Amino acid sequence: MLKIAVLVSGGGSNLQTIIDRVSDGYLDKVSIEYVISDTKGAYALERAKKAGIRTLTYDKKEYGDSLSGKILETLKGNVDVIVLAGFFSIIKKELIDEFRNRIINIHPSLIPSFCGKGAYGIHVHEKAIEYGVKISGCTVHFVDEGTDTGAIILQKSVPVYGEDTPKQLQERILVEEHKALPEALKLISEGKVRVEGRKTYISAQ
Image (cartoon, rainbow, N blue to C red; front, side, top):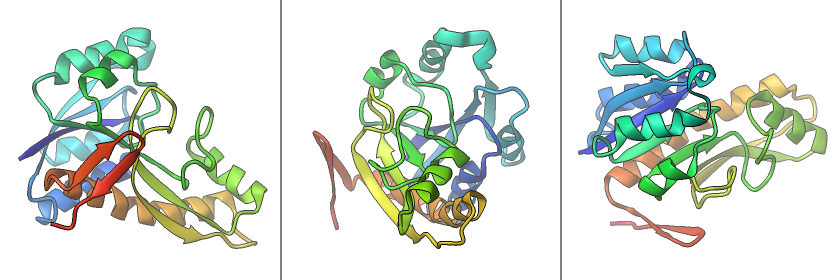
């Protein structure tokens, strides 16, 4: 069984998708051990509590630079994989080193486009529309010391229309995020993901 912790900051729609896919048996080898928020009152915590999942809040305003250390203290030896699902705090090296190639994030663009410092939330979609791209999407990737620079596990694309608002594009991509994150977790839980440098290899067996 793959034991995971999900780190959140806001509403938790991607967390809900994971909860639902565990519940319906798609993620039959995944167990959600913790949901940790860096924001007091995040609605994602309510989603977790309804599902009977252990929740913790380490408020970024209170913990500051020691946030990653506190998360590491809690999770070391207790989970196999950390999932960042709308988690806006920066993960520090100590946590990355302990969970090397075992922290995954979902980003609402096709990396390396519209990612990196300042590229989060609706800002990503504003930039995509401003640039005039015809295709955008989402990326599930491993977390390394950079911002959105880790090895890519999988990507899903959507069309971008000339009349799109950032909100419309965001909603279209979110549908794909809710497919991509469980899919990546399923591959990892079945031992089908191998990382070599910047590349991941997905085995068919």
